[in-house]
Length: 124
Length: 508
Image (cartoon, rainbow over all chains, first blue to last red; front, side, top):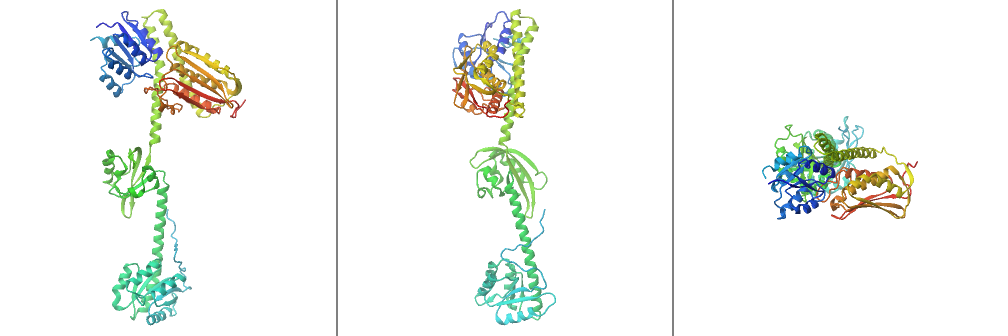
């Protein structure tokens, strides 16, 4: 499957904007953004090809957001990559039980972010 | 340290050892035998003098003893009102500290020995050639021996009292175990710490003090008492009578006693220390995250610009982001230093009369950029403009902290309102946002330094934790109060009050 529509979720405005600019380097990607878990659930209704989801967010955190995405049949199958600074076993366990495509550790390089995404989505 | 031995007798007050003063003997015997004994004792002697008082029955003896002081009793066991060992036992029970020598017939030596076994000093057989000589020496020894015994008992009693005093006054729970690990002594701190009375745990095994998972571990220290390995600090959990657990440091040491090696343990409740450690490590985790977030944005921006794969408009935007984030880092570091300074009492307030609106406007101005970029509107609701005394820079810092916090947690197109409400004695400033709110349990913790409240899902309050700690300190320094009202999921109001009249020193 060819990735075209990406939903980028991060509560930090600037971190989100930098990632958005980074992703714009890949011409065929069109990126929408969300600043919270609630906003992400709303925008996921448009069924993007991929969701980049920050784990540590105020309000609804990334893991809760992911669980809700999986519970909803409409969004259950959307591929998700988690963005996290945590390497704690608990988080990784949560992630693997919720069938994520992979995890990109923060802080990631804004220059190589597209390549990391391409590598993780190569088998889709 | 041992005190010099002093003889303190409460019920019996003996004469000092003085050869000039006769020793007072109470002789309890039949008339004939008493007459002979009295003659023998009162013969002129060079070494000592005896003053003999004679009575014939036990009841008379006890009456006499209660009336006047005696140094020793010479007692026949066969009396008109009491016969046999019982005679001695009754007298001894009445005056346990008074030395008694039994005077007995040839065929009653068994009974004399029985009396000695029960606390009499000696027995002397009457009607022998050497009766007088033996009786004198026996009475003399009896007095000395009894006094030495009482003195050493007294020292033991006082040493024990001192030991118990030490144990009782210890700041830790002190539990003494025997070598098999059974509890033999505890102090009142132990009762308090474990929520039980000493009667309930004395005689129990050491493992009643710890949860089951530590039972074998603790027991293992009682197999090799006195071998030097038993000088150790266990960091474990203890368990109260009600089943609740708490972290402790348990210090085990061998205790040499006459009854063998015991084990003394000082148990310290480390709940508070653990909580403080936990808090500090959370604080560092937050601080690291808060410093890394702007740094990641700065680095990301610069990396993208350097890679030269983006347009000039985006380059300009990224440079602006890098600048804003650098200032954010600087603010965080300044906050950190401010907090230290305020804590150390190095800041003095510069109180001046000011109009509330003027301060509010300045605070809003300083956050205009942040608000615009966040697409959040900041609305001032100042209906009257009271005058107050405050340190302008500091109060603007408080307002900036509360406002930036509110802006940060507001959704795009949200509104942050700042209201000023004058009361009789103070002026209330309230900053309301439409953010996710703060969970009930985190409200109390919100203003505690190093202990950021968490937003509903467990996300830390982040950099605002520091800001709120500083705000609290500044407001309190002004003699005001700070607080928060929140509806989970429906925004929060952070407020503070400042007194209309200055309540602190340092007006310039």
